Length: 396
Image 1 (cartoon, one colour):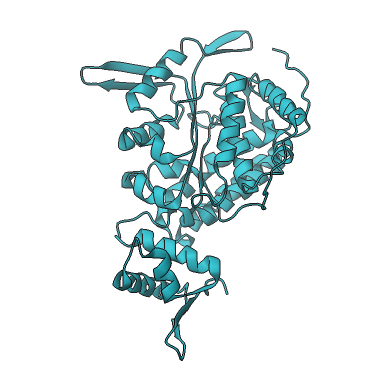
Image 2 (cartoon, rainbow, N blue to C red; image 1 turned 90 degrees about the vertical axis):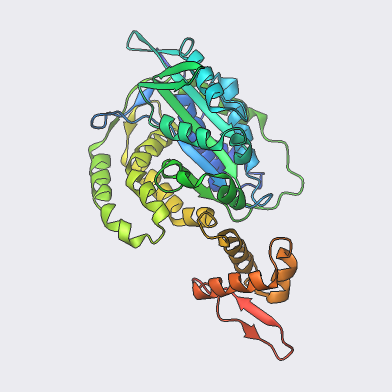
């Protein structure tokens, strides 16, 4: 199939221009764009890689305190554009069986042609602005399902006692989810951390808005139409990726450093993500390249860009996962650390006034003792008037 001429030089860069007058962090919009491209590509493109090809499907999670980073915007736009392009998008909340039934039906209607031959597939873009809604019906079942479907199975069988079975063929599942640090700690099943679900997700951590926009202007509709037009072209690209010799050499050199870095990462919850990061780099490289070209060749600059983005994910994911653990005070420790870090220093009275709904004086003292012992806050200073102050010191 002959593809139309694109209207934009680089889809991702134009997306950033289109959303300039918004408050969400630029990384949120960038990863939203990468997700949108990967969801549009579905199973139509791939890179041969050992026994199994690598498809460009991505799981992306935006994590930020409620109302802090305007994280809903990238998900809303991604959903709108994918639907306009004809890409199947999930409902906001569903049971495990409801999703597999819906996906099983897609195989009957979702086709593409490559080199004169027609192929069927089962694509689905799962978009949820609130992870708690996504997991409301069956948290353990949904997490296990998404974990399984990430690998783009040629055939995947789900059977239930007395309800029949759903067979999914040629799966291509992408996921774009937003949540808060507290919800991540309370809503996500413990078995999803480390070995399972989160090792397959690019967790993008937000700390503050990009800029303050009291009255946002109307976005440029001409840019939107061009983005939509080029996304429609992207959704028709088919074929096998290759990569340049320079990109291959860079990938090999970087890959050979990964095992030695396990010991450098103190947070064991990230070790499994690191073990998969090389495959994620290929997926992200494919999306980066397709943003500016219809040719299916991973270039050095694509791979370098992907590695830089994923290294940033690795550096900040612990912040997002901070409250997830077996300790009953883990959520409070994470929350109060963020409060002190944001202000630079806070008094005990200020901390108790802010957090009294979730803790009391004795519990707060225990949490603060833990934070001081971690070495991120200095030993408390007591003034002549008896005011106790805690000051953030990590990174100084």
